[in-house]
Image (cartoon, rainbow, N blue to C red; front, top):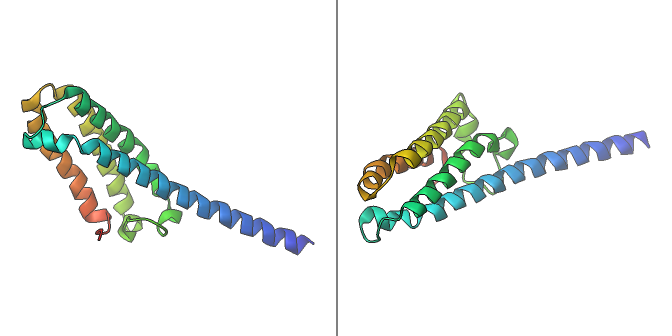
Length: 146
């Protein structure tokens, strides 16, 4: 009886741990999808094919800032595998600290842009470098998507 209870307890604990990793993967995917959706109206603005809309830009920047604040906690060691595009390199050496620092910079840059972007000119001057931050992280820590 004790052995059965011990086995069930271990199995339940493993299930909870696996679920926690899956939850982290789902949450970070949801945040990244929200970032992508927030970016969609900004690209035409940057290209000049859509009019500048400050409210849309501010909403996107708040989305990025929110995601950047949550992301560092969403890469626990038990989320290395599963339905994820995160590369194993995140959990090697000091890369997790680098990833966390990149998220902090992204959040800080989003907060700064919320203050500095006031019109089309400041938007076009600020956002390309901001989006390069995103690309740098994806280049190093995200698997190429087919």
